[in-house]
Length: 243
Image 1 (cartoon, rainbow, N blue to C red):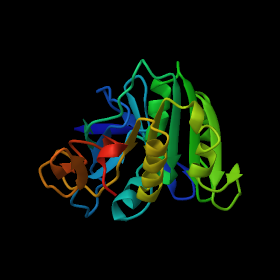
Image 2: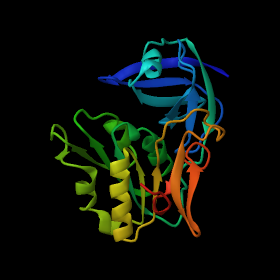
Image 3: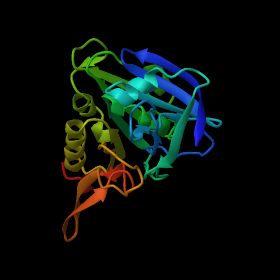
Image 4: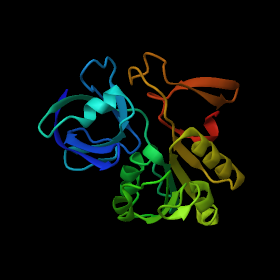
């Protein structure tokens, strides 16, 4: 289905924020598949950063030909988008002290989640290599702690360093980011016996569970199984995922 681009701005070097009209209300953690045009064959999966009044926002980093094509699109151009796809984050009334942890380009989908959790006591830890983005937007929904690897903004170090300062007051953890970070979050959640949901990134071909490109190894009662990140995820309980 065709959707009209409302804005497509570079918010940090190589990172763009695109908004387009979209009618279907997504759940936080879901994603859309976008045809990037040019000679790209497969649609690209992009997480949903925000949704408000028939307007969807995605934030993407230029990493290849598809996202480069997206970065060149203008206001009023039309793009082919399907979705929302996948299983998103579960929100529980029983948890009031919530820790949201994001790293790098895994941070954007946590903004929509934080927005949906805004009546809770939320601590948000965001980790970057250097230049930060979306900090003001996250600050609307909770107490934000920022870490950078080079110390150029916030606390120098990793998100796991900042987590240690508040972990004893947490009822549930939500995370999204690179696999080493998610694995570290999983270890912390198990050490402190805190339930944890994480959004897993994998390469995808179809986005609907047909091509098996995004298979993810998970723990089951009878051993190990492979689940499809696009259909069964991208959000899983951390204890399920084998890194």
